[in-house]
Image 1 (cartoon, rainbow, N blue to C red):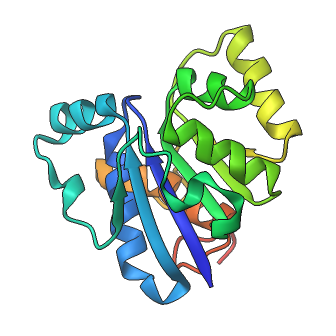
Image 2 (cartoon, one colour):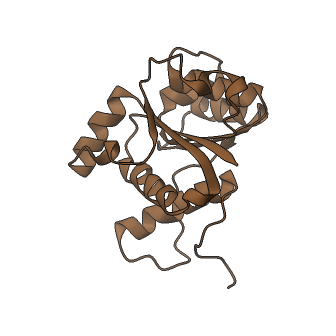
Length: 185
């Protein structure tokens, strides 16, 4: 059974984190434990973009970004999935270069070293060469880069529908069985 960590950074795109967590609440039978760690900036961005602090309302274990005693700071805890959504370019850079200066970057380092699943939903545009090289480094180390680029095959009609095309993709990449639009069906 999966143990999953959702990390939320201060990049714009709190709607993605919210929709991802909402979806995870609907598929609780597919994981054993859900943990959440948010950067300080992530909380500010969430409040700015969504106008609330409902990030505290999910049935999950919450950890401070400075809590290096969190179970997923060690490979022995058997957290097998980590999704960073949204993932700032600063967080990407720290992960790509092995700089574990907070719990998010430490947990990502553990997931990579243990050859487990790491999915980074990067949220920036345009990319500079440093961003691209950092994405290459994470990919070569075994991580998956999933830019926050929605699809429109399903003819979404609301901003939530558009954003959900990205969060559904994140859950697919993480290996969850979800109901979503499938091309050709």
